[in-house]
Image (cartoon, rainbow, N blue to C red; front, side, top):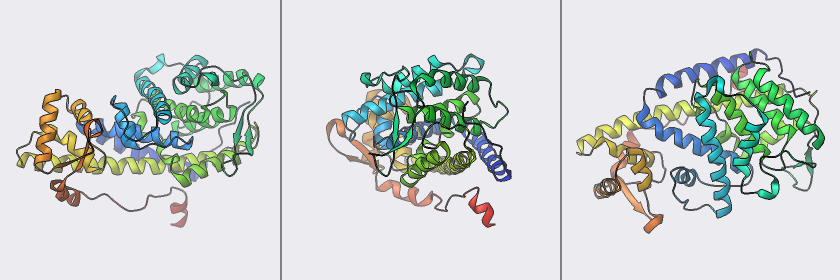
Length: 382
């Protein structure tokens, strides 16, 4: 028996309605604006990768992950962290690619083992892509010497994975996708079927459930960035412990887990909406001011990342704007000459940040600093 999907209450249904309304609004704004959303989608993916790996102790910057996604070497991450990031990015790319698979996508153990192999390939001693043969423990975030959770006996794992695969294909199909994704996450992380990489696989599976929905790019639905923030990570471990118990106990109430995830999805979609609004306004403003300056509109592909504080790499700009190497070099030099960009670093480590000419745009296009709405607490307060 798996951990069961709980009955939703009025507050849950209201939160889901608000999430769906915001997602609908996002779809209306994102799909037609293909020029600038390409960069936003890459940034959201990078943030999800950073968040999920940070939970496991592999800290990296969003800039480094974006560089890896573009085939560039990271500037700051260690070699061991780079391998973790590359592996998870490969799995996420595959998951995003499955968004148009439709009915061709059938969940099976081979698919899940394959994704696990992508994430853990560089740890051959951990049997990547194969179910564990021994016991597994999850240590307490308060004391690494204490086992906060003990996974089910290894002989039960194939049976439980069979149940999970059957549920993914046929179970609770009338439940909202946010609830199904959250329950897939919970059950996989509690089965803990592999020797290592179970947390990242569980979060990846949640994203895969969204990808199969195909209504919204999966990176707009992932809560990994939110989960990777300090206090949220701690709360994540707390609710998993509260709901899952110290050992496999699927009879426990899963409602607190669903509330936790719905709150995370609600805040994450609020953040996505703000980013879409901010970057659409920034694109329009930058397009206007670069036209006045006599620059081609393609240069906005270099200026937009600098606007939101990312490091601009010449090779990434070249890919985004679909330019030759020489044209990209000429554009970057001209942007530096005019003060739109400012160079940092040397040789292969060189990157660019917002220059003084960008300051009026930064001042004109302000980001909201209002706190995000908590769908449970703020409604109760009102």
